[in-house]
Image (tube, rainbow, N blue to C red; front, side, top):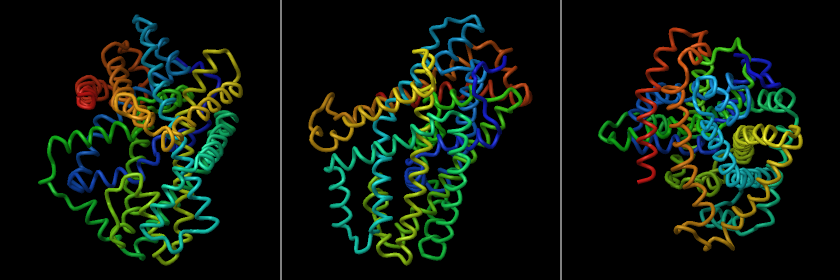
Length: 447
């Protein structure tokens, strides 16, 4: 079955860059190294790599093969593949869940990308000279209280994302990622080399790669499974949509392996960009998102060449944020184009415009609407709980369940015919490892 989509990736490189750009988000920059250190260093890395291979690659493969075989938006691809396998077209709900998940994430994620752009402008215009803990906290708090600045930066970020999607797969997404992703990789490597000489590099090396098996518990394994599943970008419809643009002669199995490997390398490299400064200046390791916006600017103020380092760092973060948003909203744009029978340009304006409007609710929930709560959570906390605990694992679980147990074996084998020796292993992992593992994530998150 050949993809019925009009757009097709022009090269393997473009597809891999787009997929890695989607998978590598702002969370990779600080969360993976931090979780690694808290869960036994290299002991956690080993468990994570096993989970990435046994769970991440099969999940990603499943989404890509459904996308290519269906050739449309996630709901229509799921419906087409289900119908072909003699199953109910009601499976399209699974694709729809991915689209809803991507849209929900984008509403709050767009605001965080706006923060990154604000700090990039700050690094470019005035830098972080004389920043101390009080100044850093006051600056970030001031940004969260400044609705005009947050709206402006969110609009700018969404305009960049919308411009890329509006231009199409080849002229927009491909052209952007083939420039932006090598730039991000170069900046990661360059900033890591800088930290080798600036201090804190060897402490980071020891922290990330000295195994402490005493910290390995059932919770560690669960954290590794969750990190492997979520960091690769499955369950959001984006990979299924990108799969719809794959030509027939592309090896899905090798592509999935390359994406997971690149995503893991980026996460590890990010550790050598972020944490040497944290170690060298004795900063708070566990400050979460505040690590980027409050803790690191203090380090920029103290390190030699900190102005240049800060500028390059926020350029790198901006690239990670924009390419992730492109992947999130491409799946929604593809669905809207099909659903309403409109052009890509019209669907882009509709999707990006509505996300921008709803992002205002997210912005206001950081200040004037912070105390408006449902189930004890404000808007941002509630949306994060929905996609983190329910939508993402549910979508991943159902895609794995469908491809492993309900999709006709001949059809899935046909999509992986370039790697026939991998097919039997993929099918076994999907059925007997991925389905129960993601079910555990879902149940644990809910209860």
